[in-house]
Length: 377
Length: 263
Image (cartoon, rainbow over all chains, first blue to last red; front, side, top):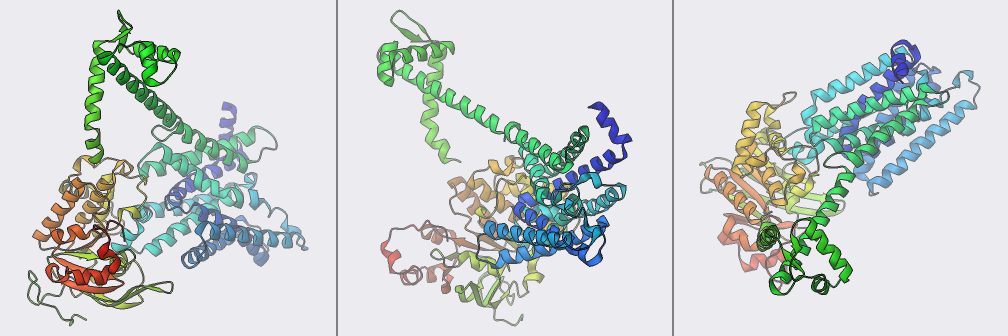
């Protein structure tokens, strides 16, 4: 493994692939954070798919396979598509997800049709255009990395420049509008920057998988922090991490494609985040819920025991009768209370300990003020 | 355009144009008019309620006036100026349900957003902005919540944060969309306190309100709206059984008060 990491610095191909993937991760992560918060993840997916017909048209028109030209074609098509999509969403009566789903498929279908047309033409130069569907990171060379740096640098610089406006736009566009901010223009700008991220991703992960590079890093980052700036930073970090690890894993063995492995890496990061992130992680949720349930169960149990202790005798029999459970269960429950130090065996059955009395008293007090505290929230 | 008539209003400077003057405002969603030919003159330095049934266009009125929804026709002046000219004198409190409260940001950050308009492009909020925002949180008794994540707030607390954000704008005319909807008594008192402070400083406040029981006690000026303006003027003149019947229809008069639905 260490050897492999060292190879990044010595192996020309691996270095470019890893750098390219890492750049994609950073840029996708940063723009994806805004895309997610503006609930436009699906829009990102649509414009990524729309890049395919753009790439094909760029090839048909120029006959060139210079990556930058194809990327510009793809980017331009994605950009036009996103404007069209936003216009359709504003004016159509279709539900948003239906409209986006249909447009995604139509752009992709158009792209595939163009691709097939090109492949069956007489152009011998066409081989390799289909790599943009799923990406082929191995083709990334130093000049591509330079392109990514320029595109990404442009995107990140602009985000830095308009950070506070983008933040307000994502949180409360109507309010931003009321302050006099040009929300339509800012939204278009942010979408255009997302197009830059897509262009960086075309060679690495391709049009189909690109959406994951916008959604997953941001979604994972959101689990770990409640601050937008940290979320963006983490999102970039997760994206870069996935990019590099995808590149490394694919280099470790023959026939492992980089793009899909990058996507698998970011998916793994997302999965871990969803389950394990403190505060928001599902596992802690389950633990907390379980603990609460157990605590409340024990407290109810203690109150039952308290009543029996005061007005009757506290034995497995009386507790079973009061709680409508089997004596065996009641016996087990008494032992649970004993383990907490709330009851102890007395001369006739069980008795509450001073700690048990104290706790029961506290609970009764708490129940008396309960309606009030609920009201105050 | 500054030649429009200014009715003599107590508290207004003589000859000063009204804080809000609306002429022939019509708003159409698809084919249905939501607001029809609305004329409105809001007196300076008063607390003004806009009341009407569900779907009467109360929120739309605020949004159309602020340019948030397109107008089919009509003109709006603020202090005799256009919206663009008067922008920095106008504060807005949207309905709190309009945003995602799970957004990764803190209470203080949201209040600082009220200062973005004054900050201008490319400038980051700093110490000065944080202190101003804290003072606004103080005004709504939310200072100790400054560093909370906004998803941890109750509905009433969310409302007070939005109010603080508008206060940070330090405007002369405020629009508030249903600030009293579904809030606890602590928040209701806090909003009322702020409303009276604003009035005390000569500010004008236009509030979309839903509760006929409290409208008389809280406000000076009343506009009854049901797509059209049914009546608008001083509370005592406008809050009459006949006007309410016209606004809500016969059904409401027999139905039990208060109306608690949101419009």
